Length: 212
Length: 212
Image (tube, rainbow over all chains, first blue to last red; front, top):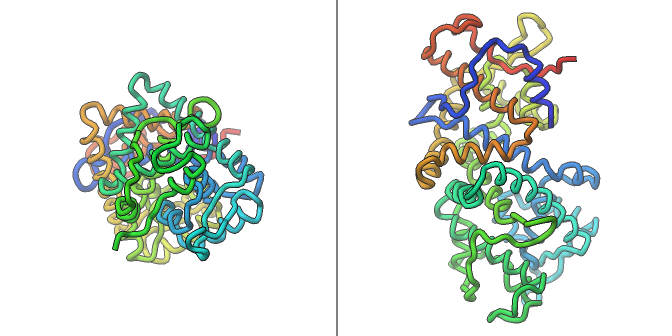
Protein backbone atom coordinates (compact mmCIF):
# COMPACT_ATOMS: atom_id res chain seq x y z
CA UNK A 1 0.00 0.00 0.00
CA UNK A 2 2.82 2.37 0.77
CA UNK A 3 4.70 1.86 -2.52
CA UNK A 4 3.72 5.05 -4.22
CA UNK A 5 3.92 7.06 -1.07
CA UNK A 6 7.43 5.94 -0.17
CA UNK A 7 8.71 6.26 -3.68
CA UNK A 8 7.29 9.64 -4.48
CA UNK A 9 8.19 11.17 -1.17
CA UNK A 10 11.73 9.96 -1.67
CA UNK A 11 11.91 11.74 -5.00
CA UNK A 12 13.64 15.09 -4.64
CA UNK A 13 11.16 17.92 -5.01
CA UNK A 14 12.01 20.26 -7.84
CA UNK A 15 9.67 22.91 -6.62
CA UNK A 16 6.73 21.86 -8.78
CA UNK A 17 3.59 23.54 -7.53
CA UNK A 18 0.92 21.12 -6.36
CA UNK A 19 -2.41 22.20 -7.76
CA UNK A 20 -5.10 19.71 -6.76
CA UNK A 21 -8.45 20.06 -8.45
CA UNK A 22 -7.16 21.74 -11.58
CA UNK A 23 -8.34 20.17 -14.83
CA UNK A 24 -5.66 19.25 -17.35
CA UNK A 25 -7.59 20.78 -20.22
CA UNK A 26 -7.18 17.85 -22.60
CA UNK A 27 -9.60 16.54 -25.19
CA UNK A 28 -13.29 17.05 -25.69
CA UNK A 29 -14.62 19.77 -23.40
CA UNK A 30 -13.19 20.27 -19.94
CA UNK A 31 -11.08 17.31 -18.91
CA UNK A 32 -11.76 15.88 -15.51
CA UNK A 33 -8.68 13.73 -15.57
CA UNK A 34 -7.97 14.38 -11.90
CA UNK A 35 -11.32 12.86 -10.95
CA UNK A 36 -10.78 9.99 -13.40
CA UNK A 37 -7.54 9.16 -11.61
CA UNK A 38 -8.90 9.69 -8.10
CA UNK A 39 -11.74 7.33 -8.93
CA UNK A 40 -9.19 4.76 -10.08
CA UNK A 41 -7.03 5.10 -6.95
CA UNK A 42 -10.02 5.15 -4.58
CA UNK A 43 -11.48 2.01 -6.14
CA UNK A 44 -8.07 0.32 -6.20
CA UNK A 45 -7.74 0.82 -2.44
CA UNK A 46 -11.38 -0.06 -1.81
CA UNK A 47 -11.25 -3.44 -3.53
CA UNK A 48 -7.88 -4.25 -2.01
CA UNK A 49 -9.21 -4.10 1.56
CA UNK A 50 -10.14 -7.79 1.73
CA UNK A 51 -6.99 -8.88 -0.19
CA UNK A 52 -5.12 -10.19 2.82
CA UNK A 53 -7.96 -12.49 3.82
CA UNK A 54 -8.56 -13.55 0.22
CA UNK A 55 -4.92 -14.41 -0.37
CA UNK A 56 -4.86 -16.48 2.80
CA UNK A 57 -7.46 -18.81 1.31
CA UNK A 58 -6.16 -18.69 -2.26
CA UNK A 59 -8.98 -16.51 -3.57
CA UNK A 60 -9.01 -13.30 -5.56
CA UNK A 61 -11.31 -10.34 -6.05
CA UNK A 62 -13.66 -12.20 -8.38
CA UNK A 63 -14.35 -14.66 -5.55
CA UNK A 64 -15.13 -11.72 -3.29
CA UNK A 65 -17.61 -10.22 -5.74
CA UNK A 66 -19.38 -13.54 -6.27
CA UNK A 67 -19.55 -14.17 -2.53
CA UNK A 68 -20.89 -10.67 -1.94
CA UNK A 69 -23.74 -10.79 -4.41
CA UNK A 70 -24.81 -14.32 -3.45
CA UNK A 71 -24.77 -13.13 0.16
CA UNK A 72 -27.01 -10.25 -0.73
CA UNK A 73 -29.31 -12.26 -3.00
CA UNK A 74 -29.72 -15.75 -1.55
CA UNK A 75 -31.10 -18.13 -4.15
CA UNK A 76 -29.83 -16.09 -7.09
CA UNK A 77 -29.18 -17.77 -10.40
CA UNK A 78 -25.91 -17.94 -12.28
CA UNK A 79 -27.38 -15.84 -15.08
CA UNK A 80 -28.29 -13.10 -12.57
CA UNK A 81 -24.73 -13.07 -11.38
CA UNK A 82 -23.41 -12.80 -14.93
CA UNK A 83 -25.62 -9.75 -15.50
CA UNK A 84 -24.31 -8.05 -12.39
CA UNK A 85 -20.63 -8.88 -12.70
CA UNK A 86 -20.38 -8.70 -16.51
CA UNK A 87 -17.63 -11.26 -16.71
CA UNK A 88 -17.51 -14.27 -19.00
CA UNK A 89 -19.41 -17.45 -18.20
CA UNK A 90 -16.08 -19.28 -18.19
CA UNK A 91 -14.50 -16.98 -15.60
CA UNK A 92 -17.56 -17.12 -13.39
CA UNK A 93 -17.74 -20.91 -13.75
CA UNK A 94 -14.20 -21.36 -12.51
CA UNK A 95 -14.65 -19.00 -9.56
CA UNK A 96 -17.98 -20.56 -8.58
CA UNK A 97 -16.56 -24.07 -8.73
CA UNK A 98 -13.78 -23.07 -6.34
CA UNK A 99 -16.22 -21.43 -3.95
CA UNK A 100 -18.45 -24.52 -3.99
CA UNK A 101 -15.51 -26.93 -3.66
CA UNK A 102 -14.19 -25.09 -0.64
CA UNK A 103 -17.57 -24.97 1.05
CA UNK A 104 -18.41 -21.27 0.77
CA UNK A 105 -21.29 -21.61 -1.68
CA UNK A 106 -24.04 -24.17 -2.01
CA UNK A 107 -25.42 -24.70 -5.50
CA UNK A 108 -28.87 -26.31 -5.48
CA UNK A 109 -31.25 -27.32 -8.26
CA UNK A 110 -34.23 -25.00 -8.54
CA UNK A 111 -37.61 -26.25 -7.29
CA UNK A 112 -39.50 -25.30 -10.47
CA UNK A 113 -36.68 -25.89 -12.95
CA UNK A 114 -34.30 -28.66 -11.87
CA UNK A 115 -31.74 -27.64 -14.51
CA UNK A 116 -31.46 -24.17 -13.00
CA UNK A 117 -28.82 -23.86 -10.28
CA UNK A 118 -29.69 -21.56 -7.39
CA UNK A 119 -26.84 -20.18 -5.33
CA UNK A 120 -26.77 -19.86 -1.54
CA UNK A 121 -23.96 -19.20 0.90
CA UNK A 122 -23.01 -21.78 3.48
CA UNK A 123 -22.65 -20.46 7.06
CA UNK A 124 -18.88 -20.29 6.40
CA UNK A 125 -19.50 -18.28 3.22
CA UNK A 126 -21.89 -15.96 5.02
CA UNK A 127 -19.42 -15.27 7.80
CA UNK A 128 -16.77 -14.33 5.24
CA UNK A 129 -19.12 -12.14 3.21
CA UNK A 130 -20.16 -10.31 6.39
CA UNK A 131 -16.53 -9.76 7.30
CA UNK A 132 -15.87 -8.18 3.90
CA UNK A 133 -18.88 -5.89 4.23
CA UNK A 134 -17.62 -4.81 7.64
CA UNK A 135 -14.11 -4.11 6.31
CA UNK A 136 -15.31 -2.08 3.35
CA UNK A 137 -17.93 -0.28 5.45
CA UNK A 138 -15.13 0.90 7.75
CA UNK A 139 -13.33 2.58 4.84
CA UNK A 140 -16.51 4.30 3.66
CA UNK A 141 -17.50 5.31 7.20
CA UNK A 142 -14.08 6.89 7.73
CA UNK A 143 -14.32 8.73 4.40
CA UNK A 144 -17.81 10.03 5.20
CA UNK A 145 -16.73 11.14 8.66
CA UNK A 146 -13.90 13.11 7.09
CA UNK A 147 -16.22 14.74 4.59
CA UNK A 148 -18.59 16.02 7.26
CA UNK A 149 -22.34 16.47 7.47
CA UNK A 150 -24.48 15.37 4.52
CA UNK A 151 -21.55 13.47 3.08
CA UNK A 152 -23.45 10.22 3.02
CA UNK A 153 -26.23 11.69 0.89
CA UNK A 154 -23.74 13.57 -1.25
CA UNK A 155 -21.57 10.51 -1.77
CA UNK A 156 -24.61 8.44 -2.60
CA UNK A 157 -25.89 11.02 -5.05
CA UNK A 158 -22.53 11.25 -6.78
CA UNK A 159 -22.19 7.47 -7.14
CA UNK A 160 -25.75 7.10 -8.43
CA UNK A 161 -25.12 9.91 -10.92
CA UNK A 162 -22.03 8.05 -12.16
CA UNK A 163 -24.20 5.05 -13.09
CA UNK A 164 -25.80 4.87 -16.56
CA UNK A 165 -29.18 6.61 -16.25
CA UNK A 166 -30.95 3.59 -17.75
CA UNK A 167 -29.37 1.28 -15.13
CA UNK A 168 -30.05 3.40 -12.05
CA UNK A 169 -33.58 2.31 -11.27
CA UNK A 170 -32.60 -1.33 -11.52
CA UNK A 171 -29.51 -0.87 -9.36
CA UNK A 172 -31.42 0.96 -6.64
CA UNK A 173 -34.14 -1.71 -6.68
CA UNK A 174 -31.53 -4.44 -6.51
CA UNK A 175 -29.97 -2.81 -3.44
CA UNK A 176 -33.31 -2.18 -1.74
CA UNK A 177 -34.44 -5.74 -2.39
CA UNK A 178 -31.23 -7.13 -0.89
CA UNK A 179 -31.62 -4.86 2.14
CA UNK A 180 -35.10 -6.21 2.62
CA UNK A 181 -33.87 -9.79 2.36
CA UNK A 182 -31.18 -9.02 4.93
CA UNK A 183 -33.76 -7.63 7.32
CA UNK A 184 -35.93 -10.69 6.85
CA UNK A 185 -32.98 -12.99 7.56
CA UNK A 186 -32.18 -11.01 10.67
CA UNK A 187 -35.80 -11.42 11.74
CA UNK A 188 -36.15 -7.67 12.04
CA UNK A 189 -39.16 -7.21 9.80
CA UNK A 190 -42.62 -8.66 10.11
CA UNK A 191 -43.64 -11.10 7.38
CA UNK A 192 -44.45 -9.10 4.28
CA UNK A 193 -47.33 -9.50 1.85
CA UNK A 194 -45.25 -11.65 -0.47
CA UNK A 195 -44.94 -14.50 2.03
CA UNK A 196 -43.30 -15.43 5.32
CA UNK A 197 -39.84 -14.11 6.16
CA UNK A 198 -38.14 -17.45 5.51
CA UNK A 199 -39.10 -17.17 1.84
CA UNK A 200 -37.24 -13.88 1.55
CA UNK A 201 -34.23 -15.43 -0.13
CA UNK A 202 -36.12 -16.77 -3.09
CA UNK A 203 -38.58 -13.91 -3.19
CA UNK A 204 -35.83 -11.35 -3.24
CA UNK A 205 -33.52 -13.03 -5.70
CA UNK A 206 -33.15 -10.78 -8.72
CA UNK A 207 -34.64 -12.04 -11.92
CA UNK A 208 -32.68 -10.93 -14.91
CA UNK A 209 -34.61 -12.60 -17.70
CA UNK A 210 -35.70 -10.11 -20.33
CA UNK A 211 -39.41 -9.64 -20.87
CA UNK A 212 -39.49 -10.75 -24.53
CA UNK B 1 -25.53 -1.99 -20.44
CA UNK B 2 -29.26 -2.42 -20.28
CA UNK B 3 -29.22 -6.01 -19.00
CA UNK B 4 -30.10 -5.35 -15.40
CA UNK B 5 -32.51 -2.61 -16.28
CA UNK B 6 -34.50 -4.65 -18.77
CA UNK B 7 -34.53 -7.72 -16.64
CA UNK B 8 -35.46 -6.12 -13.36
CA UNK B 9 -38.09 -3.89 -14.84
CA UNK B 10 -39.61 -6.91 -16.48
CA UNK B 11 -39.86 -8.68 -13.14
CA UNK B 12 -43.34 -8.30 -11.68
CA UNK B 13 -43.28 -5.96 -8.71
CA UNK B 14 -44.50 -7.59 -5.54
CA UNK B 15 -44.99 -4.33 -3.79
CA UNK B 16 -41.58 -4.30 -2.09
CA UNK B 17 -40.88 -0.86 -0.74
CA UNK B 18 -37.84 0.79 -2.26
CA UNK B 19 -35.78 2.29 0.49
CA UNK B 20 -32.64 3.85 -1.01
CA UNK B 21 -30.00 5.01 1.42
CA UNK B 22 -30.99 2.69 4.23
CA UNK B 23 -28.14 0.66 5.73
CA UNK B 24 -28.60 -3.10 5.92
CA UNK B 25 -27.35 -3.23 9.50
CA UNK B 26 -24.95 -6.14 9.02
CA UNK B 27 -21.58 -6.76 10.62
CA UNK B 28 -19.20 -4.53 12.48
CA UNK B 29 -20.81 -1.18 13.26
CA UNK B 30 -23.20 0.41 10.80
CA UNK B 31 -23.10 -1.34 7.46
CA UNK B 32 -22.77 0.86 4.44
CA UNK B 33 -23.51 -1.94 2.04
CA UNK B 34 -25.60 0.31 -0.21
CA UNK B 35 -22.59 2.55 -0.79
CA UNK B 36 -20.34 -0.50 -1.25
CA UNK B 37 -22.62 -1.68 -4.04
CA UNK B 38 -23.14 1.76 -5.60
CA UNK B 39 -19.37 2.17 -5.73
CA UNK B 40 -19.13 -1.19 -7.50
CA UNK B 41 -21.85 -0.34 -10.04
CA UNK B 42 -20.54 3.18 -10.64
CA UNK B 43 -17.02 1.91 -11.25
CA UNK B 44 -18.29 -0.93 -13.44
CA UNK B 45 -20.03 1.57 -15.74
CA UNK B 46 -17.12 4.01 -15.58
CA UNK B 47 -14.50 1.52 -16.74
CA UNK B 48 -16.81 0.10 -19.38
CA UNK B 49 -17.12 3.41 -21.22
CA UNK B 50 -14.18 2.77 -23.53
CA UNK B 51 -15.04 -0.93 -23.99
CA UNK B 52 -16.47 -0.60 -27.47
CA UNK B 53 -13.33 1.06 -28.80
CA UNK B 54 -11.08 -1.37 -26.91
CA UNK B 55 -12.87 -4.42 -28.24
CA UNK B 56 -12.60 -3.06 -31.77
CA UNK B 57 -8.81 -3.25 -31.52
CA UNK B 58 -8.66 -6.46 -29.48
CA UNK B 59 -7.68 -4.73 -26.24
CA UNK B 60 -9.08 -4.89 -22.72
CA UNK B 61 -9.22 -2.64 -19.68
CA UNK B 62 -5.66 -3.37 -18.65
CA UNK B 63 -4.50 -1.92 -21.99
CA UNK B 64 -6.56 1.17 -21.26
CA UNK B 65 -5.01 1.66 -17.83
CA UNK B 66 -1.48 1.25 -19.15
CA UNK B 67 -2.14 3.62 -22.03
CA UNK B 68 -3.65 6.17 -19.63
CA UNK B 69 -0.80 6.30 -17.16
CA UNK B 70 1.91 6.34 -19.84
CA UNK B 71 -0.04 9.17 -21.48
CA UNK B 72 -0.03 11.07 -18.22
CA UNK B 73 3.59 10.29 -17.33
CA UNK B 74 5.65 10.26 -20.52
CA UNK B 75 8.96 8.51 -19.97
CA UNK B 76 7.72 6.49 -17.01
CA UNK B 77 9.40 3.23 -16.14
CA UNK B 78 7.82 -0.21 -16.04
CA UNK B 79 8.38 -0.37 -12.29
CA UNK B 80 6.45 2.90 -11.83
CA UNK B 81 3.56 1.43 -13.75
CA UNK B 82 3.60 -1.71 -11.60
CA UNK B 83 3.37 0.44 -8.47
CA UNK B 84 0.37 2.31 -9.81
CA UNK B 85 -1.56 -0.58 -11.32
CA UNK B 86 -0.64 -3.23 -8.73
CA UNK B 87 -0.84 -6.06 -11.20
CA UNK B 88 1.73 -8.78 -11.73
CA UNK B 89 4.84 -8.19 -13.79
CA UNK B 90 3.69 -10.99 -16.10
CA UNK B 91 0.28 -9.41 -16.78
CA UNK B 92 1.82 -6.03 -17.39
CA UNK B 93 4.50 -7.54 -19.63
CA UNK B 94 1.93 -9.15 -21.91
CA UNK B 95 -0.21 -6.01 -22.15
CA UNK B 96 2.79 -3.77 -22.77
CA UNK B 97 4.09 -6.08 -25.50
CA UNK B 98 0.76 -5.89 -27.31
CA UNK B 99 0.65 -2.12 -27.02
CA UNK B 100 4.20 -1.84 -28.37
CA UNK B 101 3.60 -4.39 -31.15
CA UNK B 102 0.54 -2.54 -32.36
CA UNK B 103 2.26 0.82 -32.33
CA UNK B 104 0.57 2.52 -29.38
CA UNK B 105 3.57 2.60 -27.05
CA UNK B 106 7.22 3.23 -27.72
CA UNK B 107 9.64 1.57 -25.28
CA UNK B 108 13.08 3.23 -25.29
CA UNK B 109 16.27 2.52 -23.38
CA UNK B 110 16.95 5.12 -20.68
CA UNK B 111 19.72 7.66 -21.28
CA UNK B 112 21.46 7.08 -17.93
CA UNK B 113 20.64 3.38 -17.57
CA UNK B 114 20.43 1.56 -20.90
CA UNK B 115 18.82 -1.48 -19.26
CA UNK B 116 15.92 0.61 -18.02
CA UNK B 117 13.01 0.84 -20.46
CA UNK B 118 11.22 4.19 -20.57
CA UNK B 119 7.68 4.25 -21.90
CA UNK B 120 6.23 6.85 -24.24
CA UNK B 121 3.07 6.94 -26.32
CA UNK B 122 3.24 7.13 -30.09
CA UNK B 123 1.01 9.77 -31.71
CA UNK B 124 -1.52 6.96 -32.34
CA UNK B 125 -1.38 5.97 -28.65
CA UNK B 126 -1.75 9.56 -27.54
CA UNK B 127 -4.82 10.09 -29.72
CA UNK B 128 -6.46 7.01 -28.21
CA UNK B 129 -5.58 7.96 -24.63
CA UNK B 130 -7.04 11.43 -25.20
CA UNK B 131 -10.22 9.90 -26.58
CA UNK B 132 -10.61 7.76 -23.45
CA UNK B 133 -10.08 10.76 -21.17
CA UNK B 134 -12.73 12.65 -23.12
CA UNK B 135 -15.21 9.74 -22.87
CA UNK B 136 -14.73 9.27 -19.13
CA UNK B 137 -14.74 13.02 -18.50
CA UNK B 138 -18.16 13.20 -20.13
CA UNK B 139 -19.57 10.71 -17.62
CA UNK B 140 -18.09 12.59 -14.67
CA UNK B 141 -19.17 15.97 -16.03
CA UNK B 142 -22.74 14.71 -16.41
CA UNK B 143 -22.69 13.31 -12.86
CA UNK B 144 -21.35 16.57 -11.42
CA UNK B 145 -23.91 18.60 -13.33
CA UNK B 146 -26.66 16.44 -11.84
CA UNK B 147 -25.28 16.84 -8.33
CA UNK B 148 -25.30 20.63 -8.53
CA UNK B 149 -23.07 23.36 -7.15
CA UNK B 150 -19.92 22.35 -5.25
CA UNK B 151 -20.29 18.79 -6.50
CA UNK B 152 -16.84 18.80 -8.05
CA UNK B 153 -15.17 19.69 -4.76
CA UNK B 154 -17.45 17.32 -2.83
CA UNK B 155 -16.83 14.45 -5.26
CA UNK B 156 -13.11 15.11 -5.13
CA UNK B 157 -13.09 15.24 -1.34
CA UNK B 158 -15.04 11.97 -1.11
CA UNK B 159 -12.74 10.15 -3.52
CA UNK B 160 -9.61 11.43 -1.79
CA UNK B 161 -11.07 10.36 1.58
CA UNK B 162 -11.62 6.86 0.17
CA UNK B 163 -7.89 6.54 -0.54
CA UNK B 164 -5.58 5.18 2.16
CA UNK B 165 -4.44 8.20 4.21
CA UNK B 166 -0.79 7.21 3.74
CA UNK B 167 -1.23 7.12 -0.08
CA UNK B 168 -3.10 10.40 -0.49
CA UNK B 169 -0.19 12.80 -0.62
CA UNK B 170 1.55 10.67 -3.23
CA UNK B 171 -1.58 10.30 -5.34
CA UNK B 172 -2.29 14.03 -5.32
CA UNK B 173 1.31 14.79 -6.23
CA UNK B 174 1.20 12.23 -9.02
CA UNK B 175 -1.91 13.88 -10.46
CA UNK B 176 -0.52 17.39 -10.12
CA UNK B 177 2.76 16.39 -11.73
CA UNK B 178 0.95 14.83 -14.69
CA UNK B 179 -1.22 17.94 -15.06
CA UNK B 180 1.91 20.03 -15.18
CA UNK B 181 3.46 17.76 -17.80
CA UNK B 182 0.27 18.00 -19.86
CA UNK B 183 0.39 21.78 -19.72
CA UNK B 184 4.02 21.77 -20.76
CA UNK B 185 3.25 19.50 -23.71
CA UNK B 186 0.41 21.77 -24.73
CA UNK B 187 2.85 24.67 -24.57
CA UNK B 188 0.57 26.52 -22.20
CA UNK B 189 3.05 27.14 -19.42
CA UNK B 190 6.24 29.12 -19.45
CA UNK B 191 9.44 27.13 -18.85
CA UNK B 192 9.65 26.32 -15.14
CA UNK B 193 12.67 26.50 -12.85
CA UNK B 194 13.43 22.82 -13.36
CA UNK B 195 14.22 23.21 -17.04
CA UNK B 196 12.64 24.03 -20.39
CA UNK B 197 9.16 22.76 -21.24
CA UNK B 198 10.45 20.13 -23.67
CA UNK B 199 12.04 18.28 -20.74
CA UNK B 200 8.71 17.99 -18.98
CA UNK B 201 8.21 14.36 -19.94
CA UNK B 202 11.31 13.11 -18.22
CA UNK B 203 11.21 15.66 -15.43
CA UNK B 204 7.65 14.74 -14.53
CA UNK B 205 7.91 11.00 -14.79
CA UNK B 206 7.22 9.50 -11.39
CA UNK B 207 10.12 7.86 -9.69
CA UNK B 208 9.10 4.99 -7.50
CA UNK B 209 12.47 3.93 -6.21
CA UNK B 210 12.57 3.88 -2.40
CA UNK B 211 15.00 6.19 -0.68
CA UNK B 212 17.08 3.47 1.02
